[in-house]
Each structure stands twice: as C-alpha cells, then as structure tokens.
Image 1 (cartoon, chains in turn cyan, green):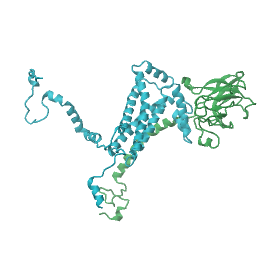
Image 2 (spheres, chains in turn blue, purple):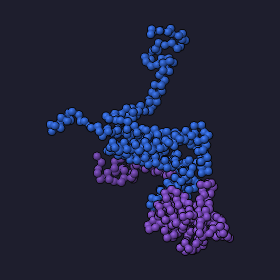
Image 3 (cartoon, helix red, strand yellow):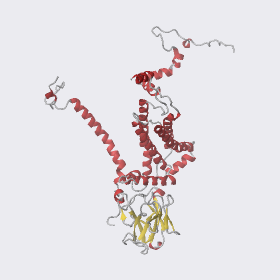
Image 4 (cartoon, one colour):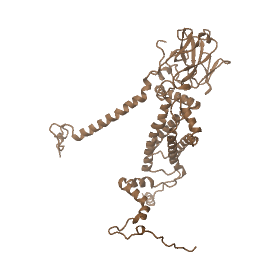
Length: 270
Length: 223
C-alpha cells in the first residue's frame, strides 16, 4: 500500500511546536506534549513525595524460583475471592436490615426486587464457598510443597489464623438470610461452641448476647461478620503478603537445588 | 571514661549524663518516654475497656423470666402431651417463640418428688444433642429429633441417639385454675434439677462442673 502523506492541518500558532525556551533543554513542549505526559508526570508527582515506586519494585519485580507453576496462584486466588466478598458484601449491606423481624423480608427484597440483587447475593453466597475451597487448596499447596518450613513458619501461623477467620465469616454469615435453615444451623453451631468445657457455655452466651437466641443475636452476628472479622482478615492478608515478599517463594520439591560449579569442585578437592 | 562506681549511682549527675540536675534520679528522656507510654496506654484503655464491657455485658446480665399462661387445668391429662407456644424473647416475632409439651403429673410414670413446680410437667422441645426441635410422636410415646436421630422416652429421658441428657423442662404452677409456665431448668439422668444449660452439655458425673451454670440464667433457689 502506498504511503499517503496527509498535509498538516492548519493549526493556530499556539498549538504548533515552539522552539525551546532558553534554559529549558528538555521536558514537554506545549499542551499536546503536556497531555501526552500527563500520566507519567502525575505518577512522578506522587512518587517524588512518597517514594512508593521503590516499594512497588520491591513487591512486584521479585525473583521467583525455577519450577514456579499454576499452584502458586492459589494464594492470589484466595485474596481475589476475599476482595469479591468484600465488594459484594458492602453493596448487600446497603439493602440488608439486621433486625430479627426485618432481616428475612430485606433479603427477599434484595432477591426479588432490587436490580441485579439476586445476582450480587448469589455471588456473595457462592463466593463464600469458593473462598473456603481456595483457602484450603492454598493451604494444601503450602503443605505438600513444604513451603511452611524455616523461615516461613510465621506465615503458616498467620495463614492458619486467616483460615479460622474465614470459617468465622462463614459461620456468622450463614445466619444473616434469617430463614429456617440459617436459624437452626446457628442454633446447632452455637451449641457446638457450647460443648467446649468450662469456657464453652460463656462463649455461647457471648455469641447470642444472652442465654437464648435473642433480639440482639442477629445484629451481633452482623457486626462480627461486617466489621470485626473483615478488618482482621484485611490486616492479616497485608502482613501475610509482606512476609511472602520479604522471604520469597519456595521452589517445588521436585526441583533440585544445584550448587554452582566452583562449589562442587571445592568439595571434591576437600 | 566515667568512674565505674559512679556509673551505678542512682543520681544522674554521678553518671556523667550531660545536663543532669542536682539530685535527679530519672533522666528527662526516660521520664518523657514513660509519660508518653502511660498517656498512650490510658488513652487506649479509655476506649478499649468500655467497649469490651459493652460487648461482654450480656454475659453477666440475668435474663428476665416470665410466667405465661398456657391453658386451663382441664386442658392437660396425664397420659399425653399437649403442645403449647410460649414466648422466650418478646418483641422479635416468631424467632422468640418456642413450643413446650405440657401434661399433668402422672404418678404412674413420674418418679421424682412432687412439689409446687411440677403439678404439671412442661418439656422443652430443644433437643439435648445440639438444639434442634424435637416432636412428640403419640404412636411411639416418644420425643424424636429430626436432625441426628435423638430419641427420648415419655418423661423425656434419653432412649437413644446422641443426646447427652434428658430434655429440659420448665417450672409450672397453677394459679386460679390456669397453668403457668415459667423459667427453664435442666435435669440430669435422674431428673434432678440444675440451672439451665445449653444442649450438648452433659450433667451426669463431672458434667455439671465442666459446664458451669451461667449468671444469665439460674434455676429457682432451693429447687
């Protein structure tokens, strides 16, 4: 195809490339170049004041061991499941009423009347199961690859706490639709808590805010589900990721570490 | 270098600390650090302790109990149970209601001592395995739980399945020809009365000590 050269459009003098002003040997010239570099300069403006790019490079451009494979994405998958739960949960909270007399009706309203309500509710409901499955798979990967060993034991411990918090989310969230299944599952769950010797009965009273399922049990579960546990999970995910970045990931067990040639030679001589 | 003996002195001036005052024992730096930590600690405690008390308060607050009429004395016989609905927690609709099975004391089956609170027997429907609702099946004369197969005989003692103690009961009394149902209590396998426990908590042997009664709900004194 022959190259066509279009004539330059008649532009007002201001928009034409100007000769550089004395003392300004580089940098954008005129509004067009400024517009082109807006993104870079905005990032530069922030970076000059925060030095975040160093942190970004440290966190993103890491060396990963040979043999890194798809199993290593399960942690990120769990995190995205959590983010999905957070976003859908926040929007469900806009329509949900945590009161014993109104909760079921508000869920019915979300499912039947609100635009995309059933979809967002279902995303939250099924997403919770997905998150539990992903967290367990992530835990299994860590276990079978031996990635919990020194120096990563603390990250394993944090991971176990995150698993327990995830189960707490599942337990407290299960009551919120407030139908027959929710109600009786919670009665059974609280009573299972109560079978712990000595502290169990008091723990049950704490969960129900009294000796029977009462007026504030639902709002208590809602507060734990909405505020307490998500905050803890978010904070612990942050610390979990910091340690992953700091310590690096492990190679899969079938990848053998190879000592450099020089080291092997020395060993033979010695 | 400072004299070693002086370095152990409690006076900052003997320890050769620059800017020390006569008779001063704590450096201003240490005092400032301590003061800042104390202030921070007090400020944190000022919002953490009340919040904790707020969240844990219901553990120490006795639940209000009421006596509710469930019918006239003629409504209940000694051979079968009559289901009645009572309100455990008011003002939260159906969630606060529970079913009780009521019958008259029957000397042929009831072995416990008679007193003012068991002229009529009111049995709670909470299964003592994990709290599902049991149903009285007239043909079998047994209480049967739909969840995990708990079975209780006519007086509420465990006849089979996972439950750890007989069904809970409610105090009853008769007032002017009306049967009133009051607070709940738990029983061990000999039907001795205990402060109400949650399902799943045995009361035989060391059970009553492993699962202590709670300040939120106690049995009536002396029963």
